[in-house]
Length: 497
Image (cartoon, rainbow, N blue to C red; front, top):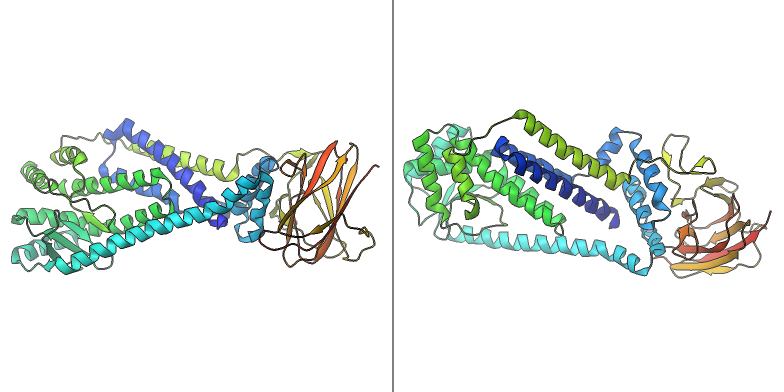
């Protein structure tokens, strides 16, 4: 599950940062933006909550994955959590269940948090969806049972006139509800307009109401509201996702008003404002259902009236809007780069040999936590280590093992090195799943020896030797297999050359 939620958490951070920047730009230059521009700009921003743009960049740029690995790898040795994130991002298809076991290096508390976090996030999303479904099902039943299909010729005439004016061919029925306090558009697949049965409207008011609701239908605003609910369900833990949804819903109403009053004269706008004042006092709190309300909340009524009446005059400067969207997208892109790449620094060299290199096919091979592959006799160099696959009964394997692989996680003190010594380890994995090995200095959660985090394939035997002599200190061999019980033998020794 962490394969899914690591990108979700990072997307949530990037989108929240971009939202804050957009809010700042709007606050400083609000007079230069139309309501429609604000509506669509905020809707575009919400895509960062749902789309992992870094993956699209990886397909467009063949060097993107290499850059991401190089930059993260430079600090991965001191942060096991970043190692996990690195592989969830650049190698998501190769994620194995045992990969989460890398976090044993970060301590038991971090491991438990890492393992429980996806479950907590999934439960929160499920609870959010359950509440939304329950509310909408109850709302749908209430609408279906108490609403009556409108057959007033005045209503049908104005509805037909508005549909023709907006170029809408679909027949959208109108229902009257005794419990509704405001007109609203309801339904995704079978849209309908619901009017409060307790309120009486003139022909012109019906015309304005239908123009408003049919504009929502024509722009597919209800579908966008469904997307926003999905964003909140996925990012239920992020308060900025709720603020973004609130802003979009408000700008949706403002932009709809803006669109339908642009051809009205002063008298018509005045009557439209009167219509809003006539219904806003009785607005019910219908937040969360899949509908588009004619009137939203009272607290921003003043701005709606100003927009309709024309006192809010926009000094439309295209340059300001272009710069604003450029700044927001730049922040989003920079945030994506920082979150997924960990910076743009080059990989640190080890004795003149870069820690990262390209394979024959040109695809970057990370130097951390990869599955060792090759036939008997094959050798692989990673960081400061040389890995060689040997026969299971090879005479080079010590007759007496220093440790037996069992359980799902182990740490063994290899030796307290006196300095200027070379270490050799032998690992025979007799289990059915790969075993993750890491070598650390100082403690099982200490500094990782470069290149030592690897996956030993099932039913294989490997010899691991250091290329350079090791500084003095305690060295530990750590083994883990996720949920599978390990089986096999381990031997190790230090020698001076």
